[in-house]
Length: 254
Ligand SMILES: [Zn+2]
Image (cartoon, rainbow, N blue to C red; front, side, top):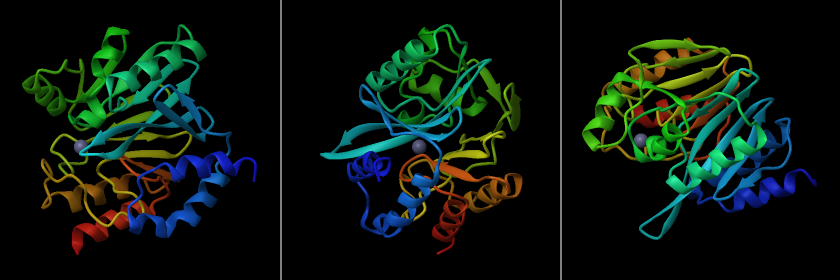
């Protein structure tokens, strides 16, 4: 129970939608089953262990008086550190960088941006200034340039494998035209970003740049490519297993 309590406190602080609380107990069990210690608070950022060398990073932003959160993943390897999506804000991105510099000084830094929305790319300048190699879909770079944001320098069109068993895959348009997913082979973690909704989400979220017609086929391409995924991390909400992908498909097809 000692190990579970901080998770409970963490989860209680999340702005869960009513429907998401249905899976609450189950998710707590899943989280408790994940090897690892308590969540770490690094300034405004929270880090939740997912597997050896892999963390979920969670950052917060208040929108119209509602405290929202966004997820990303952190992968620590002897050869270097990979951050998947920047925290939502510049401050939380600085907090993550400070944590990494303190805990893993001198390791090469790499950033993968899943798409050109603030909750994925908002802190890019912090990582760029720190000398990170930044990877994204070529479309993400184009969108970033149009928004006046510093653009990633390593561009992906369909898929790309990075050292450390990390695969980046653009399945086609879904939540956005440029969205990519990231596969961490050794730990069987799929960072689906906003291509997937959380297990019990009852809506598709922000559809401003979504392609609803293309999304189901893109999602199926992800499911077919990563049948071994054990942990699926969505861009927002609670992570889980492949049921997140199934739930997202259900939301798309209703
Ligand atoms: Zn988005």
